[in-house]
Length: 410
Image (spheres, rainbow, N blue to C red):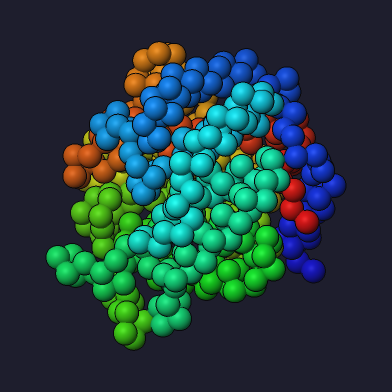
């Protein structure tokens, strides 16, 4: 048995032994953590509460100041209810459980939607978190239904889940984006919930294809890879987000998506190839000469004449991924320290909003699509979501708890 697998089995045993059988969160707010962590959650709670009245009035969810409140079909609709579930996990307050359940219900029809790959973001961040914290059977069913919908976008020829539909203008026949790695968690959970191995098989095929065709020798990746839908052959790398040269672009949020995705692949499979891949991505990021001192990345690591425009969402996702990765590897101390540095930066006045400001969003200086001039240097609800997730993981690690301590997995 190799070292990586032994470590994985040990972590899995800890998860099983530490998993409470009660479906009620007790709250982490009393756990030991630096004062800045609890202060950050105080901001998250106040900002989420500031949004709540309008969200409930409209039954829409916030995306950004620029885009406002959006219908459930928007790819970001699952993040705000996910934040409410995280507040329930942190505080243990019945108030947040109730409000999270209310807002999650606004997304009910999305569990059957297969118009793009983002059903994982919509349903896992909302219904998935809801189930892990409450054990509600309707939430479990929604995850399985969403996995079925997502799998209709899989092709045996390409061995991938199609992210967006074909686009003649961009000459995309079967476009796959690196963000899609984040949806694989939904598929693994659906196998656990249903016993249907086909979900896990598809997730594994997609991850292996991504390793083969989406990454360069330095473990950076473009946003988009296109395949031939008829033959399954790789066609080319391309961009949509990030710098416009697909041969060199290293869109910062995309690099964080990949790091997170391959880390969860190791968690779910215990296969050393995924751990090695995640570590190589981490090395690319942490040793990159264009990484700023505060570790909140520019919008693209390889854009010419690196501008000052940051993407705090890339930082939040990277911090959450590094904290999990730190539990699986001999490089754990380095990854933990890097994540801690990112979180302290995001929790500073430069990035953390004052309650009642910033449109009730938590994090400042997040960038959606720089080249398209969309949601630039502003707010993004997914920056807030992964920031809250990373803080929860940080608290748990500081208290020697499993990262998945409320996960009622069998």
